[in-house]
Image (cartoon, rainbow, N blue to C red; front, side, top):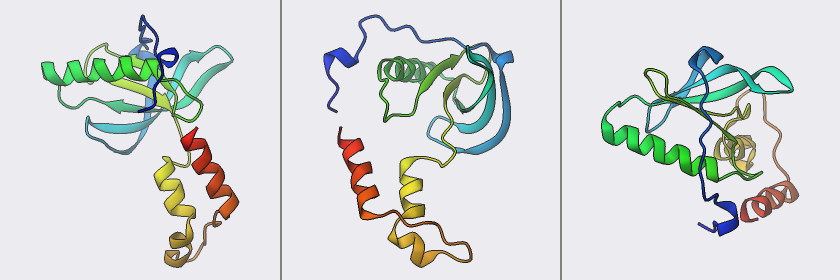
Length: 146
């Protein structure tokens, strides 16, 4: 995957976030582990009282699912990069277990590219999204490859 040794930390410390600091706002979708919600998270960043985050919940509380959850949290803690959505930590107080991520208001890259690519212009009804230029698409591809 192109991960070098200097990108992985020897000792992994996954940040634990208290459940009372997470306020769910609305459902955004559903993934393999469970539902994903838009939430407000308090006391996460020293410069802001609260920030919008995306939280991923674990629907299956089996031992194997919990092990996978913790393994993914450790991997995400180690995998910090400017071109990857920021992982803030987990909440393991009670159920469901929760992972807390940076909120991307335009969705993931796939959704953004589909909404602003040439096909989106052809399929748009009413409000047409601004199409990305070739230069913008090349810049995005270059950032992904970096």
